[in-house]
Length: 636
Image 1 (cartoon, one colour):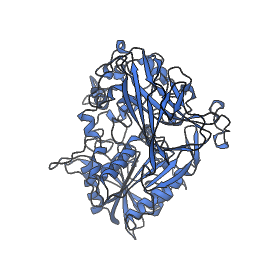
Image 2 (cartoon, rainbow, N blue to C red; image 1 turned 90 degrees about the vertical axis):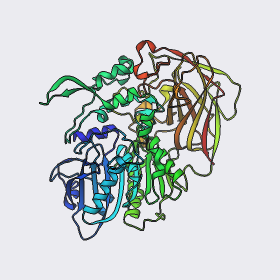
Image 3 (tube, rainbow, N blue to C red; image 1 turned 60 degrees about the vertical axis):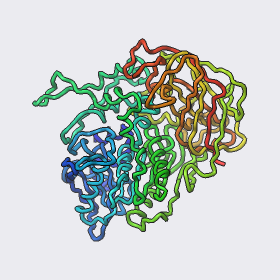
Image 4 (cartoon, one colour; image 1 turned 180 degrees about the vertical axis):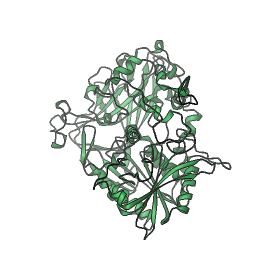
């Protein structure tokens, strides 16, 4: 259970229990499937541990549905089966051959793990990458697994979603359908970084990816840092510069007897992060969205994501757009709902993100009406482009309803600019250019949440009430008058800031907020909320993003600010689909710290923030000019 629990903590919302308890509800797999474990040899000789669940009914042939994962294909051993298999219960009960594989260097597979292992476009003989590992696995499965119909589909959420994307590149001819879900696209923009800013709140997850091993194991070989507090804000504030966290990422080296020696081993992922602060060749080589031109039209794709996914919002949006750009003949669809990370795989009826309620049976309906139909059409059905599913099936998080479009963003979207005016106004026309100053105090950074807790990876903040931030002097607030008609955003948002700072470095954070009416009653579904979280005047965060200011012109070649010089900083916020309803207000918040979601910028330029000293951190005064604007994609 520990292995699955740890994977879930990282953000992979798993339905697949490894419990050995057998009751009537969980007996379906045991009663209807047989399990075999095999080691499949890759072209370079490395063997990958693979678990195959085959229907006991051998009177017909079945497609193969495969998930490749770094999070373990447990339970291991004869007679030990998962209680739920496949993408959802419908695909499990309809009958499919379900395959799980530990990727290279993880758990029971041989080899050494490389985090976001780089794709090699033109491989030489016996060269391997995740693309070839997937190809070789599929080739073995269709040739050796009995009763398969020759059609393969792949799926996965988060890191397994990344491997589903990988499967579609230079794909095996048997691969007919791939569903990358919350898929990582590039580690400089997903999960551990946002636009070059380090997600400090993820630091406990580093060891899950960076603890070295070179032999197969069915037990966890990594451990997580102990914070010994429930107040993560104070913990990181007390720790100070990032280099003070190095102590958490050195592990004992074992001698030949398995005993700890005097030598230490560095966490290779932490070392990679701290030694490569810029978007250099290391990160560029690991990105996968740059290779969407290698997805053949023979593979149908359905990219799935959540509008409130704190971990992987960039990846699925950019994966879908990349395939659209390069694959004019591809069947490529997008599904985005009101979910946080992987919540579409949930079996719960009430769909919340944090405190905010979006409706009933949203995930269950997706599984039955969208996901199951997609795989059945391409693996069991005609497999043509007439799947009966929309090109874009997206949830309006303001109106709380699904919409279908022939493209994403919809064709009837126009760009509109709103300006950050004085007196906290967000206006459709630019007024005079004024300066608005605030002090960014490194000893009192703006928190990302008002909750006092320690979390493994944060999620709830994506829909948190933002009133606590709006009432701080170091958070600038700009909002419209009460809207007299609905206003729908559909697509990306570009913040075009004009700023200055007394220092030579700064981060810039922009948040888009839906301010609910003061007389809005809290409905019965939100009865669980505490008094201070009632819906009256609730400040729902619709979208937010950070830009590490040094990367404003190039992620590869950072540069300092010239003190007190007016400077352009553009921030692309990921897509939204949200209606600001009549009677609501649209609000923009601008700030310079977001702690400890992201690490604290020294506000003095240093070449590598991971090596900054305490003396480099200085309180500065920042300026936002009122000719700054926000460009929205507005549905007409």
